[in-house]
Length: 154
Length: 142
Image 1 (tube, rainbow over the protein chains, first blue to last red):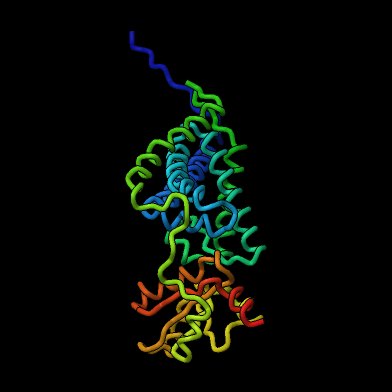
Image 2 (cartoon, each protein chain N blue to C red; image 1 turned 60 degrees about the vertical axis):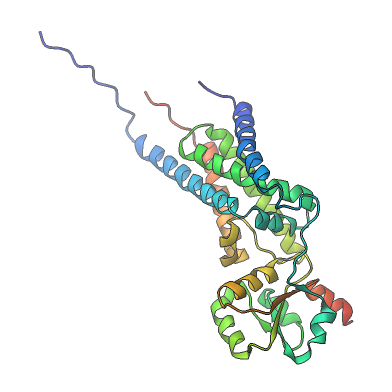
């Protein structure tokens, strides 16, 4: 008598591609946050100056945030890529994007022309409009990831 | 093991503190924790004006702000049109001139960004940032 081979049930037709796209989005956004956080890790004083220039927070708070936020970004980036603590990472990165967007628009409205500081020294080569566009795209993807459920593997 | 959303948030927010505190401890002697550091490249309006014709004024603000009003004789140099404007700026520059970059006000950092790029990329020395920016110039010239 031959061995019976148990065939694992396959995922429903059409379930693979959307999940691949979801994973691709998560990896891309996670990668952006790792890059953004990593760029700021090497020059926390510059990032503190960028935060302070929005004229919203005092220096004493800005400098402490400048040491904390990049690590939070990097950690959330890895959480998105490796799909661990995923919803928490989406919520935190989404909140960070909203805060950055709000602060940037507020600064612009007050006539303060500043560098976003989002990507450390690399921010200098991006205009305000490009920063805004990139931030909006990232926010849109994060919202999509929040409402896009991960299909449980069978 | 499924972690609740609140647990995920606490874990991520809490774990980020560990390397952050480590880095802050490493920098603790190098950082001014309570007051912003003073920029040695800052120059006041009065000081810049005392240099007379030797000053090359550079406006780092967006195009529409420059078009509205700017310091007489200032050239534009912002990061949106860097290459083209830098070429024009260098035709007006000479080693004896002192470059003073300004943006809208004291807290903007566009002028600092431009000044830093001039020092690093164009290898210019004698590059300064106007303390108070356009707002201070306007206030003193009303």
